[in-house]
Amino acid sequence: MAREVRYDRRQTVFREGDAVNSVSVLASGRAKITQLSRGGGEVILRVKGSGEVLGGLGMSPGALQFLTAQTLEPCVLLVWEYRKFEMLEDRFPALRRNTVRIFADRLRTLEEQFLELATEQVAPRLARMLVRLLEQASSDSTNVIRIDLSREELAQMTGTTLFTVSRLLCDWEEQGIIESQRKAVVIRNAQSLMTLAENHYASAQ
Image (cartoon, rainbow, N blue to C red; front, side):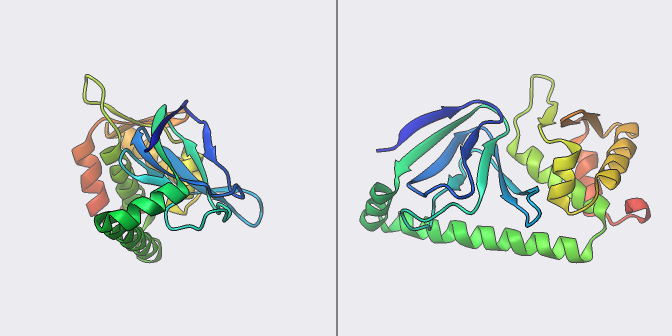
């Protein structure tokens, strides 16, 4: 009952203000979820990976999207017409339970991010966010993992400034942990990055 839809890199799946008419799941690839600030700037809320619900879940048909989804790489989506998806939930109680679990997971993630913003320095916060992203990403034949987000986007996601993110990435590049590119970060030493994510060291900020 689902149809397969393919998107190229950096293609918009839906925009803030679009009518909700379907439920979509990422079969492959990654996409960023954003929202406009009061000043009109884009704020990245999270990055979705393969197997995650991209949009429409828990909303009423005809309601307006309050988020925007844009692919970070070529993606394949499985898309259900909204009312057909509701019929499936009624027919299969396990599907409805999974819907509730997804919302509980989202709430827990938001709580964790709020706690990090309130209590942690920038360095472990940025490292932890990169660890989350590398867990979604796939590696090449040399086990190198590329995260297709710019420094500006990383700053948005960690609630800090472009200057701070640039300085930390430069420090980590000198240590051989990452390679900072114009619109991407290449992870060279995932274990060292995980160590940074766990430590609150003095030079964090």
